[in-house]
Length: 383
Ligand SMILES: [Ca+2]
Image 1 (spheres, rainbow, N blue to C red):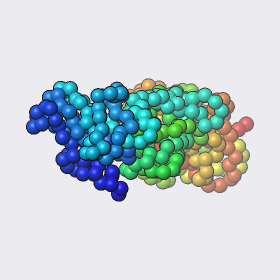
Image 2 (cartoon, helix red, strand yellow):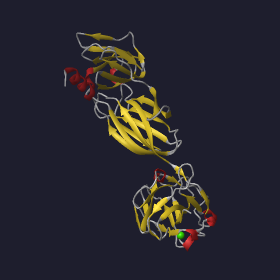
Image 3 (cartoon, rainbow, N blue to C red):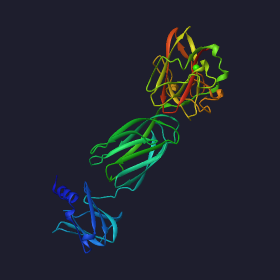
Image 4 (tube, protein in one colour):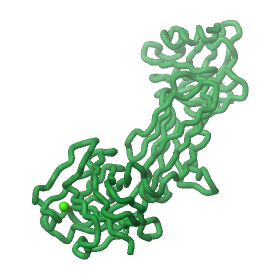
């Protein structure tokens, strides 16, 4: 540590190098801290003049955010900088580096589209003694996005950045002292999702976030639907929801007849207690061919989203994020709340799956935390 650093360390741990003069020294409280080539002092109490041992002449001083062009002085003999304070609580920022600038108080950080032009909204950032707090609303379409955050070198230790969506922490990382860093994280985003990007650990001297960019990696496909009573169950391979062959990530609950109008008088309910929960069914295919899939479910949540896999693979890009709908209720008392959802692509065209004769598996995995009751699945041959 150089001599300045040593003196400033003393300043930090024992305010003995700050002296209040021309006031009532016993009534003034002084807090001091330093980072890099800055000293920040906060003084509370009666009017006073404060001597701060800075070891060299400051290049600029700001008092309560306003630059002090005169009124302060520096003594080569004592190595002290003297600053006048009026009564009250005031903060002085003393710069010891060439061409100093006060940190920004606020900034706009666009959420750029990683491909093409335009933005998905922007974050409003505020800067203060603790760091930077930025927040904003995502304006793009529902989907999974790769989010990249680029941070500038911060020239200090122990500054941490964190990113969250709807208050759920998504990523946290430590910023690098000397080089640019980039953090990539995958996020499920919907229109109006609240995003927050914070840098904590102390005052930043410039905006540490050089950019935020997002790229959609999977769209959410809203499934077309029709009343479950119109499903022609005799036309296909019917797989009862309740007769699953495997599951993971949480308990699967069976109704045991507690819901109205369920096929086979049973169904799965509250499927979706945790992200990543899954349920799988094994089913025989009597004849090789192309099949369409209908899933009969009920929900009183806004957007249950499930990933569909057949024989261990996501069979189409749309199957990554299939969105069911709020059907009006959980079908506890009303059979009409069972809806049939056609597995379709983004244009609403039915997907067709090639299935060989023999055993196959179909799996639904929870994305998000919205519940879905599942009565049955039906693979119907394409005619
Ligand atoms: Ca059933």
